[in-house]
Length: 393
Image 1 (cartoon, rainbow, N blue to C red):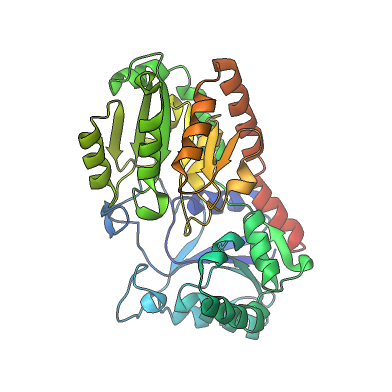
Image 2: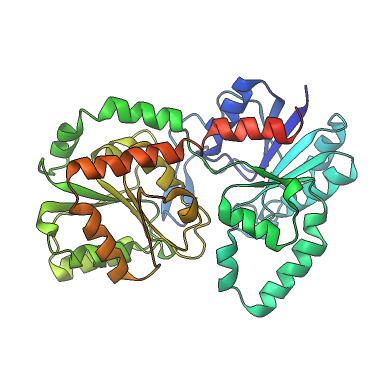
């Protein structure tokens, strides 16, 4: 059985269940190497602006190893040299020849070290990064030229395969000279099975959940789920909500925490807006309740939002979606189940939001069913099967 290693900066709530699923399949002898223990205890997250500890078993169901970090400024938010795990060299050396190592991105010293050393020692290297081609347009001409030199002529010479997460990420690799025979589709996914189970369990409890947070039955709910930070532009959604002519029969819920919360709260107060709820941070075990009562999901993100996995979550709850055109997942996940709107264009967002919310229940439900059908391809099953085929197992 071929040895398969994932190298990750730290345990991530979306990836742990994926690794457990791959382990279930027994296609590979699986091991996950982590460069940091961030997220296993209540560590401060500057984007959430508070300490965060995920309440799902991220390490359950697969073998994991934590590498010693010798950085003088250790941490996943400390830049390229925040993770320096020299012990990875010995672990690579001890692997069976022809093992496969999947490295997530190149943002840390350890990631680049692993890519180079593993290739030199005769292993297969798969690079799985998130970058969408559309985000290259935000970079200066000098930075574009530098990235072309570094990626095309150096870093991308080492991997044997490139695992693309969606259409924009595929175009990114092709832009830097990666050929089709080196590309494997491993879509960005959430635990569809678990979220759909929650949807089944909660769909008949919508009225009770609404009553618990003082939302009248019969009102439609617009949902934002994510960090309240600038790149996600939660204020754009609030401004668009204010412009809706029929907002008296609507509720807007922001599920999340972050630096933009104070601006949102101030705007709500200044404008006297009603029916707006900001929940603060909601952990994984509770998030499903908010998807269950929503009628529409909106993501307003800008450059820096390489995918937007909360969109996948919402689609498992059969929700229509509105996604900005600079959000990495937009061209993959929006196809008849909602609309793509122009990023930062609140008028465009208002028009499209109003159109969906004025549809009757049957029409909204039809769009939601299509969401679920689309997200089925963006699944752990697709990832495991495509790795099995693409790596010749």
